[in-house]
Image: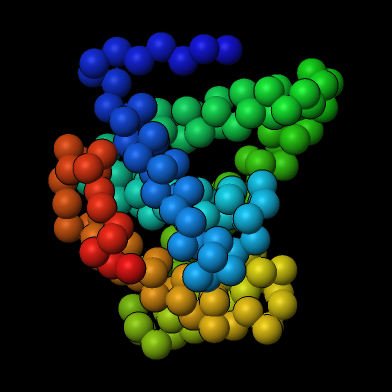
Length: 173
């Protein structure tokens, strides 16, 4: 499958930017997120969920859905490039979908929490459970990720859609 981009397809630019942000080595070196397929998916989903939350609040559901569709198409293509058989793809994609929608519901509930201390605590628990397989020895790393997530939410909520493809996370690190 090949993706063809037209000039008006902003969702390609936004998705590409989020993928590139998610590949930042600091997540895997400083925060100690496992540099595995699961770890990389976790960081990608963090950024996409925060972005999609912003797009929904800005009433850009179509753009949000286009980005989600592109993510699933990209993951499907990655499985195929890895040599996963055609009969296994639907099972794997179903699992990815369950992970995505489960993480979305959890993270959105946490981010909608009004009490900032409670929000930080819930985020730490979220990252411990999802990024570090409930290994409490990574609590400090989960704290770093929760600080980053809160800062990323602040950054994304204060920019326009056209600025998303030019996001620079260096300012919040």
